[in-house]
Image (tube, rainbow, N blue to C red; front, side, top):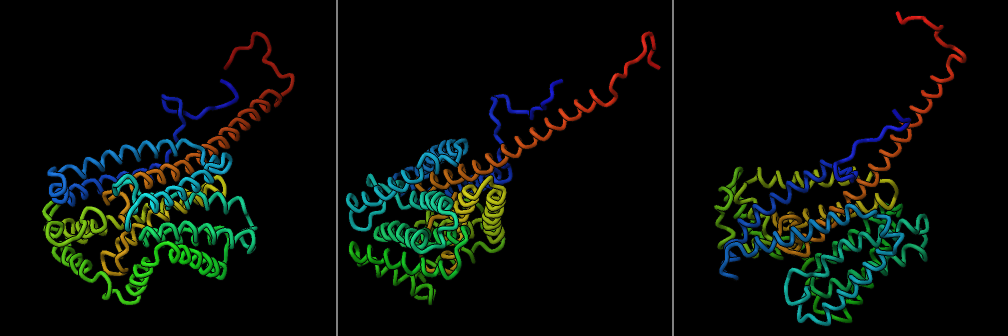
Length: 411
């Protein structure tokens, strides 16, 4: 027996170190989402494509693409975002795509190639987390300085948020600002600095909107009025959602048996899918979905806490916060706590861009956990090897010169 004791690996030779609880929660959300999506989309799919399975099959394709992306990011060392300047490349490409939408698209277009599945504003959400995590980690304590931290960060948020807002995707712009504030706070920024950051970045974003599409101000004004009085904006949609929840009661009318998706709810397979959950699975089914998002946040923050370094903590916390923030904004809109915002419900709403970037974020979060777990295992192997070596040396030198007399038999 050698002096080193190796931990067991899987047959392929890869040390996976997967965070099982986080993976199980994601799997549960995906299964939940596919079931509800099929139930919510078959009627809309039939009217648009004469095929009840069209939206569901598209979602399966995007699920496959997103799963591949998740595996790639899981095995990629997240430090490459910093060492190889991948974060800078990602933010540059994202800004380029946002500009391309303005040039190619018409009216309030948010997508490329004439479809709704390829939306750069969805990509911008995950990229802004990655870029800011790398940027804030590299700056260290300098982020508290106006010239090194506040102003550059405000310019980044204002530029990206403004470019998203002029695509009339106000909810995505709000999400980007919220992510920036949260990451800045995690990096050591004070509440006073966050307030200054919000003012500067908001002013820059508003300037971009004023130069390119001043009519977007009306949507922003509507959103703000809705915050002040929820009954003034989107009351019809909220009333229809309430009707669905009332009909569902505690236990729901049964999966696939809902009526609201057929005659009441706008876009039941995207923004309003939580109302379909409320009608068909009732309060208990809705509460279970909310609980899954809460568990996702808890486990994601646990991974962030156990991360190897500050970069890993910022990445994991920022990405899981983004996913859960979007979920609770969507839910809050449906139950009347926020004005209509247009946020998708992660893992649930139909849409390729959102599902792919969400699964990519899952892969990065699991990757942060993998790197931390592998480092922990290396430390254990080193400690165990040192103990084995020490005991070996002690055993060899414990009784110098001692030997059993020749011919002596063991008792």
